[in-house]
Image (cartoon, rainbow, N blue to C red; front, side, top):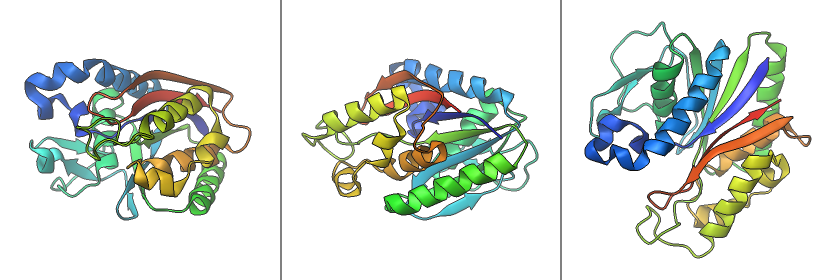
Length: 238
């Protein structure tokens, strides 16, 4: 049973241990993300959707570490985990684990990594299947989408500057704020690739989970681009 869907960005800079004295620069973003995690504590489990280079499904027993980002900080996807932390755990799972550990440590979080180049049609199919599975399961479940906006908003952004990025990021933020699932479903894959908007596939899965009617309520609690990447935090409710 889907009780809520939240969206947070994926940057490792959310983790203060990785940023040292620069952590203050993203304090507002981090606080908004942690607030969303706290709101999801009512769920017994999280289903996490993010993007990456390859498809992956991580069970709630997985353990990872941010060692590849500079600090050997372990995170887990559930309360019953064991084994050596995996330094290759995909970033969406690491971020979800970090958020779960700090806000909802009794929750179990399974993670689906969708390839960034997944077609809109396949995203829609996956989102519909996911919603069907959630509706068939009476366990109170929250969907957590870990995805960014374009990484081309400034000259120092990871993808450098693209003149069309600002307009697309503003449109993305507006769609998330009002629950416009159709606008997310209409994101153009070729343009998103050009803008380094790798979260496009995850946004389109979110759109398909809610379908043409969209959410009953939607709100964005934070939007910013501290390093030239669009970051949006908020919640949709069925």
